[in-house]
Image (tube, rainbow, N blue to C red; front, side, top):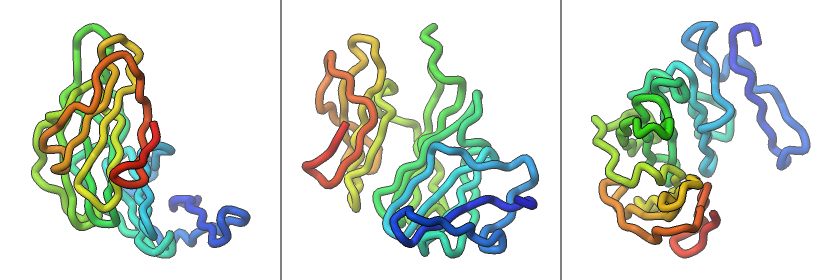
Length: 195
């Protein structure tokens, strides 16, 4: 709206919504920058949304004020590159960056790089190659831990299953491997989750 992001805020569980003043948000890079419907994360009073220019917009006070941060990505959802963001709490999270087109089934796989933050996305580490199973890219943190669970939405036999990392994605351990499709995953704590 007039060169500003359109962000609405609720304080009654979604019954009513109020437009956040454009002055509360940093300006887009230019008129070509836009946010994506997917790839956004909420935790506590914090919310992050991503853009086609590789930026993250973050609020830590339930949407009253906002800050903009750059990332190692140039776009969060382009054909040749993209990424997904996950947070364990208001400070610790990861971005999984994809370089190359999505798998085509012709044996051509993109490469993935894992970036970590410990300050809510203000800074990111230098990145390291993804060491998890490339078929299992549906991720969720156990809240307030460095444990990530990865599942697979593939329908091809032998690509199903799940695994976990207890060190923020540095190493991975198989939970199950076989013929059960897991799909998206969400975790309430270290022993309760959904898929």
